[in-house]
Image 1 (cartoon, rainbow, N blue to C red):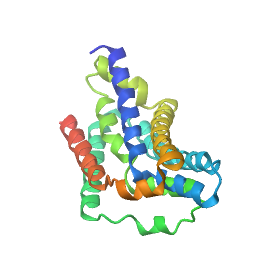
Image 2: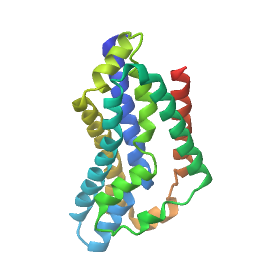
Image 3: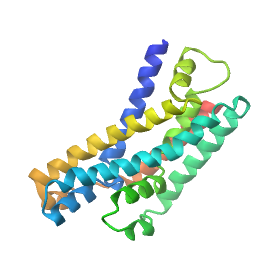
Image 4: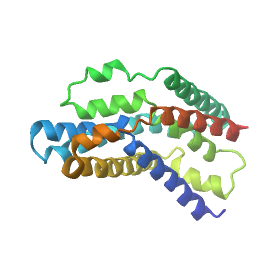
Length: 219
């Protein structure tokens, strides 16, 4: 695989994971619909979506920035990947066992959507699920074209880590905004109550899968 193709594949992984987060109701798009309906003003919809995006972006950066700096520790790369994979698997198994959403999220004031989004992303492991894959493809030994491309994207370069967080959040925001807009302007809450989809189990299993892929890559 050429370096250009490797970089393109990595960016697509960032985008697809963002779309996945955006479609998941657990990341907050129903709250934006609720905020607009309760206020009776359509302009509250984009404002609420922007606050959710801001909180999600902060959560991604809080996870990705430390790991992007840690990957410069050549001798610790494999250990970091193994540890991150185990943590992600444990998070997924915990969410499978405990289907309830964290109670502290319910105590966050509805007006503080940015804070809620940040806490929700952290509690559900939204940023954590990206770590094992990126640590694997940013391997620091035996660098080939694919690894060189990944290093150019994600290793100790803070600006690259910020770019990953921004692109991921944009993908999440756009996909969530499309669903929220369609629900608010055309389908309404009645349709939402009848067709509600819950991705909690899929979310938990995806964390386990990502962790297992990270373990396999580390070996």
